[in-house]
Image (cartoon, rainbow, N blue to C red; front, side, top):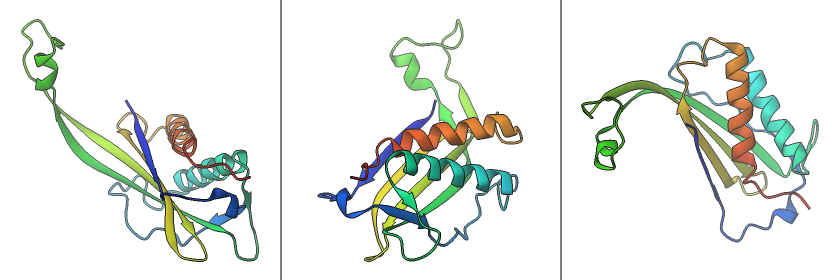
Length: 160
C-alpha cells in the first residue's frame, strides 16, 4: 500500500506562480544501485512531474527564470514491519494468529517545489511504498512512478 502526503506553506498564494523548471539534480544516492544514475528512472520521474504540473496549469520554461524550481529525491531502504498490532484488532495471517516480522524494501519519493525568487520550499510531497516487486521491472516501475507523482501533485495548488 502506498502512503502519500504533502505540506504546503501556510497562506501560499499560488496565483503568483505560472512557470517551472528543474532545480539542481540531487547528489544523494538512492541507497539502491539499480536506481542510482538510472536514466530510465530519471526520465520517467521527470516526465511524470512535468506532465502533472502541466495538467495543473503550469508551463515549463526552457530559458529564462521560472517562478518555481522542482527538485526530487528518491531513497530505497530496508524496513521491518511487525504485524502484532493486527492481532489486537482480530486480523490474522494464519490460524494461530501469531505475530510475523516482515522485512521489505521501502521506496520513498520526495518532491520539493521551491520559490525561485526567495529560494524557499513552498510545497513538499512524499510517497512511500514497497518497491521489491517493481525495481528491475521497467513497466511496473513506470506505473508506480506515475501513480506516486499523480497522487502527490493532486495536492499541489493549481495555477490561475
